[in-house]
Amino acid sequence: MAIAQRDPEDDAIAQQRIVSRSFLFVYVPLIFIVILSANLAWVVYRQNSNSPQASDAGMKFLSIDASASLLALAVGLLLTRLQWASANRPSMAFAIDDEGAQFSKDSTSWRIWLHNGGPGHAVIRDFRYTIRFVGQPASTLCRLSEINQALASRGLVDGRDYFIRWLERGAPSPPIGHYDQGLKVAWFSLEALAELAEFNIHITLVDGAGDVHAVDLFAIDKMPSVAVRRFMELRNSKTVTP
Image (cartoon, rainbow, N blue to C red; front, top):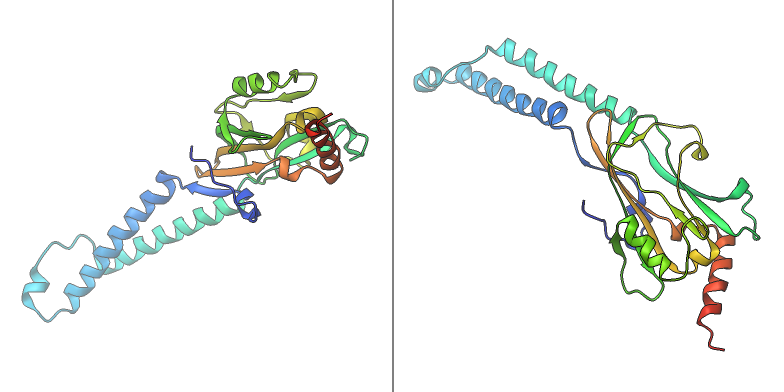
């Protein structure tokens, strides 16, 4: 899966985007539309041509009436399918809060929720993290085991200072009414947040119409200001030489 390159000045990259359409329900109808359009154009040309060679050349597959009717039907079905897919498009997003959703300056850990705001159902096709620690020049695509090893090397304990969930291919993401009905994919203590310059979630999913969507979520950038102040103070205190 290609990971989108992030422009810090452009939040549009965090929006969900369609990366491919269903071949069976989009491209196959388009092929029929092209064939029927070509047949209709050829039949009209032959019928209105004054050249005997043109009127006798080639093969007439369908009459004008049949070609026009089938073409209109195919176009109508394709437009209906696209409209239905748009109306039933899943909407993947994430939210960040603290325990009890109080957004308190005294909170010591912050939770990241992944949720589908609907209205359509989705199934995870690919799920990845990129992470960048303070002092690293660039973010790195990591598996969960690698993230755990990197955090452990910084003195952080899984389950005490942080938790990160891994989603496998095929995990369902039904539409929900509120973010806290979704999936808590991670939580971090202030000590863990002080070590992270970036923590990004990259998701590829398939909707009920067979279209493939991708979304990139940049968690550290969206941390509440009360959390940012606290972990930045902690981060800065670690860089001060006694």
